[in-house]
Image 1 (tube, one colour):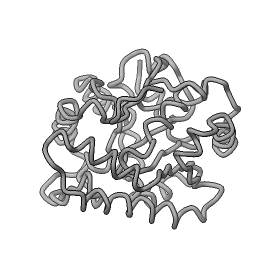
Image 2: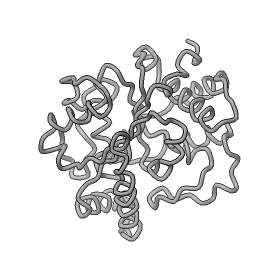
Image 3: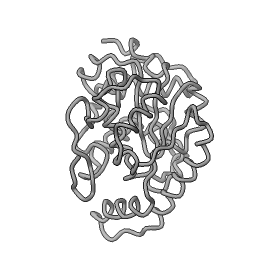
Image 4: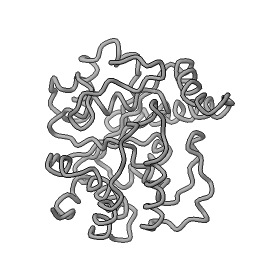
Length: 267
């Protein structure tokens, strides 16, 4: 199937999910996954980092980008191989891997122009192509994408897609800090200064851009847990989607999802 058929997936109000690590971004994506009118990318795509942009977000900090070639297919291949090998049971969709050969084929076949939006759409088309036939057959009109560091690129995404919708989920900072610390403790006793900086950056961004009420929704994780139906109805209205009861059941690619809690609690 030609990737060109799907290049308009990002032209009809794409939906971007923002938030710090362990703040509920995966849950929100999983709840949106079942809606018949969207296609949720099941793993963080990290377009800006993969493309060589400098990342200031402390938990994915990357300032070596000046040594990288931006928008290089070789660079994307190496980045996705690394993404396939990294992660823990508490990370974003652990065990899910991109089909890198399929990514390369779709990226090379996609019509690419020199604009940032053109590059982004070629990359995202290739990402969708790497997910397998089941995703291509779903033929949804809007995509949902979440990458934890993307809130710092909101000005670029907003300029690329003036009709896009953004949801920034925030959580009690103390609970977020405890969860991140427990997740990172797998590799030894963690220093928490990066964790607190990441939470502060996320909260500051959410506060500043919440002024764009028709485009930028700030959602409290605790509110979503306490009253999921009310909040998912609010989110549906914000996204111009009809409410569907499937929005109350977290899934990934249509399969039931029990969560990635560091405390191993299941939804």
